[in-house]
Image (cartoon, rainbow, N blue to C red; front, side, top):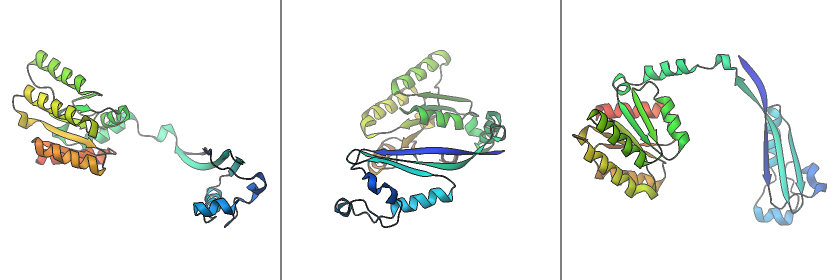
Length: 239
């Protein structure tokens, strides 16, 4: 069942503000409050008129409050459709869906995720609920501690796949972490390491550098989606 709700969105700035006498004209096409100022800003005078039309097409309202020399506050309502809770997939249904799409061999793997962003860790964890063992940590130190503890208890290596958040400022720490992992492994060729990388030039180059340095390393770019993970796992299976 779909419900209709209104979102209230407010945008505030501390800029030059708008003269109160001009406020009633701000929604008009090609109108500008102070030609001497807006000329320098290359404004065409169409932006607010377009915004007003879009909001009204959606069935919402748009308003403005402003003080000259202090700034302005624009607010508008936007109609959205929200699925009722009863029609949303339950956690069990979601798990069944992800279990179905994840390769069977991956569901039997043991996976470690090291990333400083809690939201990203939780997002991946949610996608991998059907996997036998998944651990997430925000530091390399905690990851190594988990590996050592498991090895002491069961005399075997803990993980088959490791995801690592890679940044410019943790390059050396990442290298040391991988070296320590490989020291703890009997056969390091069985370990697949995937770098989680924001796709800008510097980090892409950094990921390639480490992939050349270490055998069995791969890369996945943010934002992380279920499809990206599935493709990554399929690639790991064939590599």
